[in-house]
Image (cartoon, rainbow, N blue to C red; front, side, top):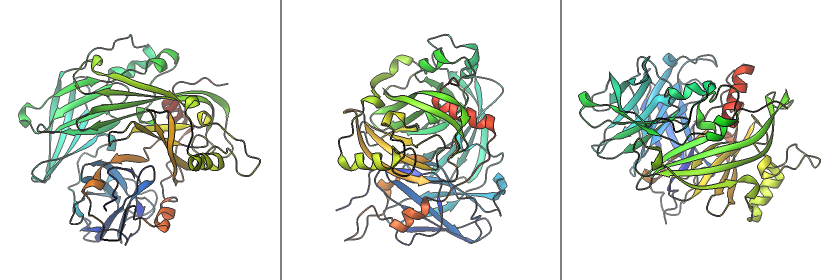
Length: 464
């Protein structure tokens, strides 16, 4: 019996090292050195882990997964030396392809100029080839530069595209402090595919720009799809909003035959006037949080295409599974270590990065921590239909999770090799799981940047 997960939560930061328990893809770096990549599968909410090893890679800067679509992963591997070798010139880029006969690895031509990861999309094609697509803003609000890399041509090309079908105007007046909403700034990319090869660049606050990449390249253009505005945040803030990418409190996925699924996380919290002594980060008291899901099957330029499905408040969520309750009460909900630690309720836990399940079930996954920027991250799965905590799992401990995305939903497991007789998924070992908990980057943040990260995740909050 094949017990492969039909989808998974893929950790965006890879582990430096080998994993001999799973099939391994082997390739070469630009320096001619062998590189090995393997993928350990786990059922959500446990993290699935990518392992990367090469003698010429930088062990102090772990590899990153840039994006994942169907059977493909786009991975960056730092081949510099030392923790400060962070230039794009220090990175090699690879396509990892899953297959039932075993995975493969292909070195990519490095882009010039270099791009932000949240502008990069990936399109698998029916002929077995793929296209990497990058959309860059220009000084004009209705024009963007599109950079394309086709695997069969093996070179980059670029062109300027107009927004021929802009999204519907905002249904409410945008406050002066929220003028950033008038410009599209991508914070993630979704692949819709189909015969037209459609990719969408998502601004989680504003909308989506769609492009049909398989049409005549000389006739390519963009069209806008709005997403529901964060009306509560717009009405409550007296400061600039939004202050950063919306991926900390909004998640959007495309599910074949079901369309777009949007999750919006709204947190009621008070910012405290002091830093937390344990994390050295700004402090919040979280009073409650709520999750709202939306769906869109038509993807036109109209707001009316979106249908609100349901809203679940954390204070109304029940925990009926005794095993889940025990884990929550003994670990995540205990503010401090030891018997004297403060016991929190679920609605008092800081959460972020909501993601809708991509197998069609009404389940939302959230990153949870005991406090903002706490070292340990957990994944909480919420059954939206029944208002219950379905599962909870420790996701990892990193030196600094910062504001970066720590996982992607992925269906690459569906394309992977079937385990031999007598072997079942999950197939990652306890030692492998233990190892991944301690690998991560520690970016340097100023107080201002740190404050913006938190305010972006939780809306504009007033100091107590």
